[in-house]
Length: 321
Image 1: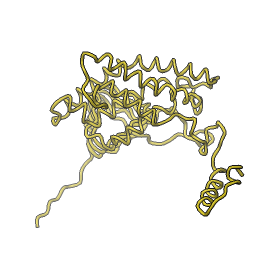
Image 2: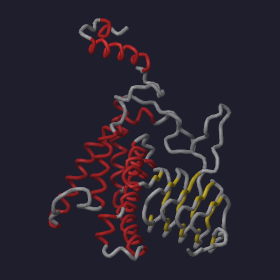
Image 3: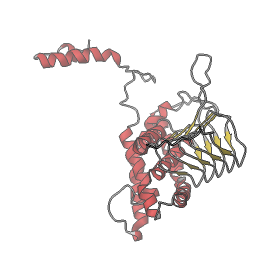
Image 4: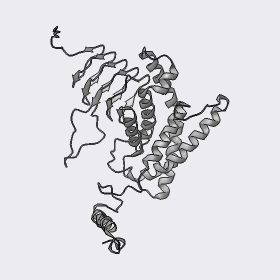
């Protein structure tokens, strides 16, 4: 028994607390292995990751996530301060994530081979990663401008671009995804998923950070949308609430565990519209360019370009009285 517990003295309250802790202690692992019972104290801190994410979203849309008026003459200073703050928050979390980098890795993914690592090498790697990451921000900003334009043009209810940027949950979801996706491409473990699940909780949109999404993407109403890790979405695609782009099945290895990093989710080509509550499954499923998928469609096969996919509805009857 832990000496702190064995020497626990006091009244009924203290005895209950000590007995509870004594029963809990064997259920925690103190090794560095990645186990279900591992202690998470040395892992990336989700609070710091989310704070950094909101700051980075604020650099993409200055003023969206922070109060106060931004002096346009000092925009450069504002961006410098915000990015510096984000750097200070997220670099230590990248460093802490490095020990997970080779766990469950695959040779078809960047950095998939086992790594020789130490505390110093982790710090050096995180420094290199954050530099590469920030250099991609101008490209992320360019993509997001197209996404805002797509939302404005794709929704008659949108009266101003400011309304789209400030209020639309789909724009927040795609902004967060594009930032998380760049970290995913740099093979940073855990952090991109923390970002995507925070976004899921905030918006109802669940996009895995591995999903590849082209420019001019619009999620209308942005509730209950699910987009899987290996999904490929082209340019100028519009999806409505409740759409699922998911996996048909999970291929297993010889030990019965799911095989990672294989194509499990659909490909959606350019200029496709997918209406509410449609479900499209499978890594071999391709929705051809210019197609429209109607509401409540369940689809597990490819469709050629310029297709119109709908269910045959049962006969509608309206009774009076």
